[in-house]
Image (tube, rainbow over all chains, first blue to last red; front, side):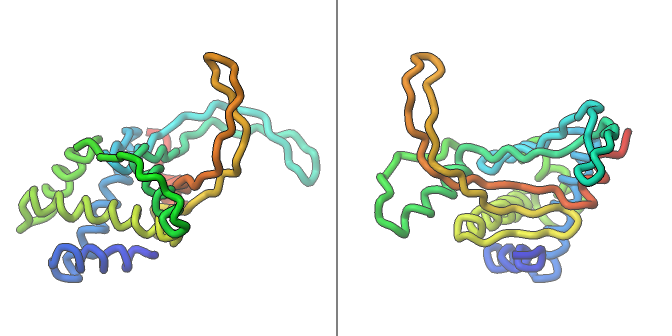
Length: 109
Length: 94
């Protein structure tokens, strides 16, 4: 699934025009990006958190030559899926094999 | 930034949509990603990143409080990998 497919789903679910849907998907993604760029955490309830973490300088090694090099301090993104997302992905996995015990997973609003 | 704030910021950038409508759209974007992953499809968004499923094998764990060992069942976990552009954006020293 690519950005266009995402826009198409939005179009089908909401009934706004295709052009609008793809513009808005773009704006949503850009807003998330800008926020992360500013170093701010993005928390989407029911989905997960995008967290910016700072990595300290550490020594690495070129695996080919064995030469030791510095890995500069940098900032990276980690995504921590929410509990809802994690169980959602597993529920549908077992639903095909009929062994899913019906857990009471009422996603709290 | 919470989802409510995201909706707020997005609706400021768009004319002609109410906050309520923006909310429906924001929800449908994240729900589509979830549904697509649950179906086993991966999502690749240029400049942003990709979502895919990672399989975790069954393993033996331990209750840290009691020390009793338990088996942790195999499971699937959502995984996000930041795209090149997002990676570079975040790493830029502000």
